[in-house]
Amino acid sequence: MRLPRRRLAVYCVAFLFAIVMNFAVPRLMPGSPVDSMIAQLGPRATPAAIAAIKARFGAIEQPMWQQFVDYIVGLAHFDLGVSVKYYPQTVLEVLGRSAGWTAFLVVTAIVFSLSIGVSLGALAAWRRGGRFDSFVSPFSVVMIAVPPVIIALATLFIFGVTLRLLPVGYAYDPNLDPGLNFTFFGSVFLHAIMPVLTLSPYLIGEFQTTMRSSMISVLGEDYVTMGRAKGLSETAVMFGYAARNAMLPVLTNLALMLGAVFGGSIVTEIVFNYPGLGLTLYTASVARDYPVIQGQLLLMTLATLGANLLVDILYGVVDPRIREGRA
Amino acid sequence: MTSGLALLWRQKKAVAGLAIIVALCLMALLAPVIAPGDPGERVGRSHQPPTVEHVFGTTKMGRDVYSQFVWGARPSLAVGFATGLAITALGTIVGLVAGYFGGRTDATLDLATNAVLVIPNIPLLILLASFAGTVGPLAIMAIIALTSWPWGARMTRSQTLALRNREFVVAARMVGEPHWRVIFVEILPNLVPLIGINVVGSIIYAIVAQTTLEYLGFGDPLRVTWGTMLYNAQNSSAIIIGAWWDIGAPAAGIALVGLGLALLNFTFDEIANPQLRSGPALSRWLRLNRRRNRALEVGQ
Image (tube, rainbow over all chains, first blue to last red; front, side, top):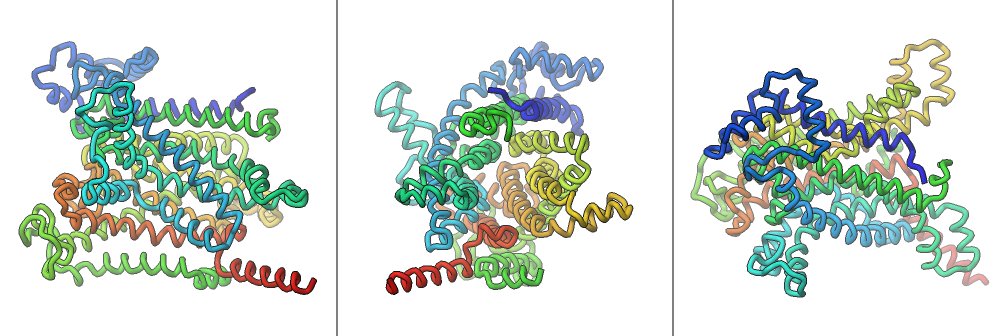
């Protein structure tokens, strides 16, 4: 199967844009981030470390294009620089520690919300104008409009502080040793409940809204009428004929929403003190650990682009018209 | 348009949404009247629960939460609305130009739109904000507007593409009207419902992004906004020690704006796209239909 060249161009431009931002922003902003970073290092500021930071942030006597080429070559060798806060650890090591937890949260939240949102959307479209629809659909739109900070704080206050039902920090009980046993998995599960529940309302709202409007237009298609005319049961027509095809726009939306989900996960991890990328980014931004902040942007951009690419491929598999290039 | 307004008025959801927004805006405008005095002033002991004297309690610094809530509405709403308008203006112009001119202009602009669309916004915002240090409201506005116009641009572009070859547009071009006139006088008025949806959606997004940035501590800590109130409350562990009023007031404010705008947007969507309607008219039709079916069954 072949990907449209235009999509690939879009991803290249987006990735290049992220790289250029990373390169240009520290060099354009007033005030020197280099001095503040060297001050951060304190006694650990060896000449080698200072030279590395200076080279990375443009405080050297070298033409701009030379610096940019060096920067790109460094990236190509997975060199994202050295963390200032956790010196001498590299940015890659710092991000690697937490990326897994964020991936776990985001994927769990997406799978959970996808199943709920799509079913709610399909049902609302099926009985459009009914009591279910006129309650659930406005509710979804409201869910999209409430910032994740608010939901996170409310969840934390109700379930974590007042009812004391769920643990309010960390990815698992710090007294446990990570291992392949039920106690550990149980602990990971319990600690993930509140963060996942915080990320979900926005996602469910988006999935429900997209699914509902796409399902409404699919329900007007001839093949749905045909299914009904054949005397198939309601559920067979709804899931086998309509919902299957209505899923496609939801997929596209999912990939585009990933950026927003990362934004939500940053806030969620901070509120619940969950050791993912968001918390790392927060500590980095408090400590003005610029290399980590930059690495974060690249990593999240890559993840979003990867997801979009995956959806493009999936789309081709699911929709034969696109696979054969006559969309 | 009149029928649109009538439809808007008949919708309970839209009226409720509008009422919420108007009430909050009035509160912000009347801040000197309903909450006289400096919101940054220390007026009581630390973290006092709500009393008659301080209806929303006090913060860790002993400031009156009610006064902060009322005054904080001003910058939060102003930045949210202004940024939403800026996002919409950018997106609409890019979409119109791309859709109208087509060809290479369209290819370039569409590429840029899709590229900015897939870059995760909040991490990009954090990168920009962290290098800029603490950022004032204007910088927050600029950063948010520059990273979030593509949604609107995409919608506007596809609508413009559908309109550009319609008779009235072709006629205007034939008469020799300049491009800018065709775009802004012939095409733009047809996009008004879409722009309405875009404005409300963008304001929602701007308020979410602004709150997130300020909550992360990138706002100016000396200005009282709902976002910095959340930040200060978080830093004084208000939730853990049970001072729910300190976090609850700004959170409720932001959630209310979101609720009001969402209710408005839901109705805008239904006006622009009748297919999505589920309001009173549709329920009435469904009811009639059911009654008719029952009558038919009885008749058989």
